[in-house]
Image (cartoon, rainbow, N blue to C red; front, side, top):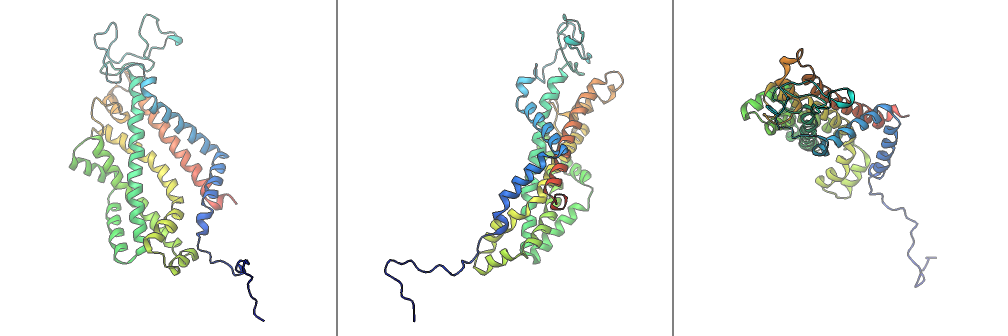
Length: 321
């Protein structure tokens, strides 16, 4: 006998609902929370975070930390002379002499103020370059991997051409064509970094688009662009986070190299690479002018490398079983 519903009886809900949600996206927040906790348990990750946090604070509060204008020279100001050695009163320097904890450079400018303000240039170049290369590279890689066909061939062949040249030499050629300057340096470093993000993104998309939740979305009539934006790309970003972190370190080194060659930030801008270049011949007579900018580059790059290693370990399931 057929069951008859009472007037106020709700319809039966015994039939299972069709699962339309992305199971990987449902676990994404939990994955990142777990990765963050694992990162904080790793000494390399904590050390990298501490160094980067310190350098970011220095860059943000540079005008408050630096005792002098980074471009102000003290030629003819009292007994100050070019390339004066460091003078720190608590370490025994004569109280009558003005304090310059990293000495004066070849133009009688305060070296400490210039190193502090140089952190702004290097970090801004690193983050901006990686952001630009990340957005362009992941977009191209996602399109190539998801649509395939002629778009995949065209995009990846262009990436192969860029990879066919040594990255630093290609970047130098781009800057030489566009003209020296910080903006052109940033653009050149970003261009030569794009293929790395595009290739990794394409490989991730090729594996993810074969999963069941993507097929279910296609069966339910979702458009390709919607599937790519909401289903595929969010689940393909994990390996790119590590590459991006390490990419900041590479970008800072490349920017310093361009500054050293005179193609990056132009005088009198306080940039670590150009500071090294201007005093490279004084390494024996005034070593502090080479030592402090070099140490600043080394510490900053070390921080991003340590953080990248920690993120790789925290995000790699095989290392956390």
